[in-house]
Image (tube, helix red, strand yellow):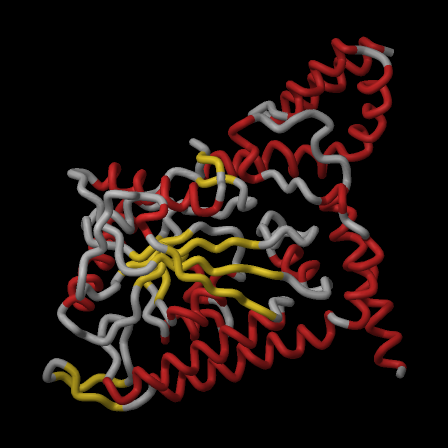
Length: 395
């Protein structure tokens, strides 16, 4: 019993601080259009007591289940991928990312991934995962699905880190992933076993190398070699699920057919949108349950087009219609700027913002307009001085 009391003493302040961070006044004015894909909109409807109750009773069970599942899966993956193999007339220790799976182990690998991914998704509160097959003709009437082609690339929208567990459960893919993932505890082991392709998005040479590796992997899969299909989130970052960002060229440059998958989270009062990283995941595990529908398009998609830009845009059109999501011109840079402009300023000036709230709403339209400009200024230090100056002039 004393462990239970210790848990309460530890976890409740943590949950309180996370909720305080995510529910404190963020935007007293409407967000600019470029920031809307990254803006969390459901916090005003949160019933906070549910998070506290879930933190006490649900969270410890789910954390134990999550880490147990990840550790067991990592160990199983290490066993499946370990051994001495004669590959391409050379002696290798273990299975390398550039080498295909031996046939007799590929089936085991797939089931290890499926079971591990499903247990992790369950830990995050996804008790039921619905899957629905949809047709391309519903959204592209003139399209004819190519026959007898091996799926090598899968594309979908991206909302949260938990997306990978649904993808892993249904498609057992490898991912186009950040290079830093390889060094993460447990996750790096899983990524290596899944033969993920790494990319440093800030390094142009690395991006070009990743494109080359994608093309090589696709050709190997088309030749019948046992590699998992590559799952790519072409937006390059995640959104709140209400918007689709422009697609990057990684999945489309080779002009090979892609399988389209739409991840449709149901509106249950909480979004796993990774705006606060691990803190968002922790809050999600405090909720009773979540729902998601996986909309898988039957067959592959390769419209008639001459450039990868056309290919990417037509794919985005289909996903936009399927998800009823608005297309946005924002991207990863806007996401970074949003985090800087909103969260950095709020962290530094939280008390000042709270004090200004009353003045803005009840006193001065001029101050309100200046405050709006301050919130979305791209020069944080200057905007703080401007806001202080306006406050002094008003007083």
